[in-house]
Amino acid sequence: MQELQVNKDSQIQDMEKVKIVTMLYEGAINFTKTAIAKMHDGDRYGVEVYTDKASAIVSELSRALDMSAGEVSQNLKRLYDFVFTRLSQAKSKNDPIPLNEALKVLEILREGWTEVEKKIVQDSAR
Image 1: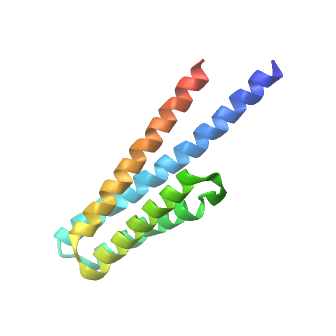
Image 2: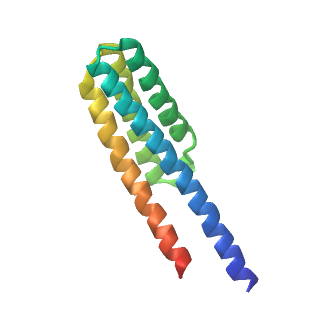
């Protein structure tokens, strides 16, 4: 019986971690969308503020990776580096194309983490 409780506690902790990561993606996506809107409005200062906010989240996600965990962490690191670079390029060149590319990657990653979250919920219901 105690083993079931330990397993349930572990699932709850996993769920909380995944939820936090998903929320971070949401923040980065929202900041990137806002930067795109600011760029269309001609608000260079707004572009800088919101790309910096999105970049800060991506940097934190990258720093949180456990690189000893293997190939998944290495692939995520490469994707985070790509997103960070594209956000920086968009800001420096005032170009919406890199922002849109960064946004697409962030949305795909968020979808993946949302699926992980659903799986944890399904597994805990058993």
